[in-house]
Image 1 (cartoon, rainbow, N blue to C red):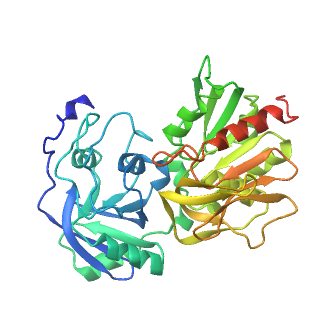
Image 2 (cartoon, rainbow, N blue to C red):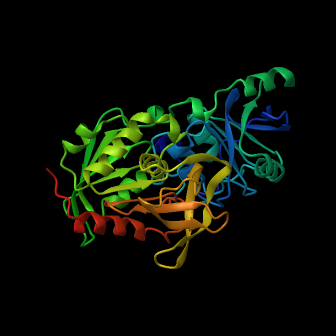
Amino acid sequence: MSELANSSSQPPATPTTVSARLMLEDGSVYEGQCIGVSGTTFGELVFNTSATGYQEILTDPSYRGQIVLMTHPEIGNYGINSGDFESARINAIGFVVSRLSPFTSSWRSEFSLQEFLVKNQIVGIEGVDTRAITRKIREKGSMKAGITTQALSNADFLKQVQAQPGFDELDMISQVTTPAPYVIKTESPVCALRVQTLVVMDYGIKASILHYLQQYVEELVVLPAHSNFEQIMSHQPLGVLLSNGPGDPAVLHEAVKTAQQLVESGVPTFGICLGHQILGIACGAKVSKMRFGHHGGNHPVKDLELDKVFITSQNHGYCVEFDQFPTDRLAVTHINLNDQSIEGFRHLHAPVMSVQFHPEASPGPHDANYIFERFMRTAVESAYLPA
C-alpha cells in the first residue's frame, strides 16, 4: 500500500464534482456529491454513531451488503493506514457522510479515505443531511437503499432499490468467510491464562479479534463457516469461538446445527455478535430483526453478574429476544441500557457463553475485553478434555 502514501496534511485525491443521489425504499431522495467512484450500488442502509474508526468499520466483514452512514459530521481527517484493517477489503457496499475531509493529517496516514474508496471501487455520497436520514431510520427502521450517479429517473431508481433481496433471503457469511482453514501459532502468549488450541468458526471474523486471542492461545485454528462438527473436533480444541459476521442468523441452518452439537458435546463454546445469535437459536432462544440495530462505539451494557456498566462497541441488526427465552437452559448475563435488549447469556448446564457486543472493541473503548479472559478461564476450568 506504500504506493498510495501521502505526506501528512497534504490534500488527498479529491472527490469528483459528479452529482449523486441516495434513494431509500420509502421513496425519500437525498441529493449530494459522489465520493469514491461513479456508479450505482444497493444495500441495507444503517447508521454508525462512532466519531472515529471509519477504517475498521468499512473493513469489518459484519457490514457486508450494507450501506453505512456515519453520523459524525466530518469523516476521513486522519486518513487510512496499514495497521487498522479488520479484513483485506472494504466490506460495506456503500458509504454516506455529511462531509468527507479535504485534508488528511496524521503521522500514521498512508493514503486518504477517498483513495481508499476508489481503490476498492466503492460508490459513496457526501453533502447530504445525515442527521435527517438518521432520524428517519430511527423512526421507520433500517431500509433498503441505493446510491447512484447515473441518469436514472427517480421512479426507475426506486423500483431497483425496492427489488433488492432482503437479508433474510441471503447467506452473507459465504461471501466473507475464509475459503480454506488456516492456523495462527503463538509460541509464548503473554497472558498467564493459556489455552493450547482454540477453533474459530469464521463467519466474518475481525482481524482484531484474532489478534486479541493470540494473547491467550498457542494455536488458533480458523475454519470456514460451513465446517461441520466433526471437522471442528478433529483439531481437538479446548474451546470453540463462533465469530461475528453479517446477515440474518435464521438462514444459517448448518451453523445452528453445528452449534447445537457443540453445546451437547460439552466443549467450551463462546459466541460473539452473529455467533451469539447462532448460539441463542441453537439453545432454543428466539432471534429477531431490530428496528435499526446497534452500530457504534458508545453503547452502555450492564454485566448483571458483576453489577457493573461497561461502554461497548457494537454492530448488529438482530438480537436474542426476551420473549420465549429458555430460562431452563440459559441465564442472561448482560443487558443494553439504551433499550434493555439482551447483550449476553451463559448456559446453565454447559460451558457455553456469548455476548452481542464486540469485546475487542475495534474501534471503540476497551471496557469489555475482560470477556475474553472470562471465557478462557471457563475453557481451562471446565471438566472438558479434548478427545
